[in-house]
Length: 324
Image (tube, rainbow, N blue to C red):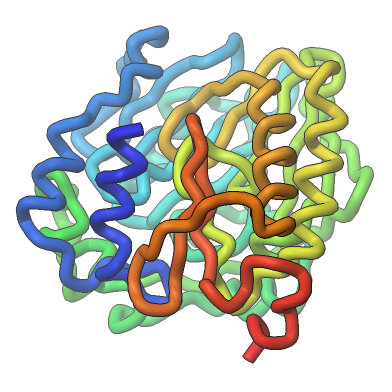
């Protein structure tokens, strides 16, 4: 898990808002040198790729829009049906994701976010139809973030190469966007020959969702699961809710054929949901070994994933302390 360890080397420089502040050049060089991730060798890069986004058709009509040069390695997904398309997340807002989407489909596009942390809603403002579970957290984040809050995400320390033309660190911000429709547990989004079911999976945030294509056995997991250190560190994190959500997704694993996570790798085995659920139970039980990440934070490392958590909030007994 060399990538996991490299990201861990970067994490002491991160604040509560997941912003990179002072990663060393050596740490960043080590991270960048390990790209591309081996998982991408299974896919052909699409011609819609550019200097910021790499695009891969991971299944027919399912495009992973990947930002490999930025330390978070965010992946947004364009899912195309016969009649309409859905863009699940819009990335950091550093590159022009709308321009990429327009090369991939001429069908009407609706945006739905896996959750509203800034690295998943950065391009929302470019689209007119945006669905949300509309919790108070979602609504607050729809107001955007000023440059001071996210400028380090566009800093040289956060990047493997330069910014896209016209983008500067001093100008980067998350622009406000308008939520135009609401979804909830069980909402079906019919794209024409492809139906997507909304699953509310709170824990990472209270507005976290997954998308399920039951016919194909596909699950888009957002930040509830990905191959890397799963962040359960934020003030808005709820461990009890995450426990229920990851257990719920694990029960779906036998019915699934593929996972599409929101960071790092564009396709993963459904069996990893079962492994993640088991590992999280070990963490809560106090039987998993932790490693200090920085003051107040610890990591739990497993074969293909891990958890980044506050050291005073690694069990349900710590809930009161963890909310302080």
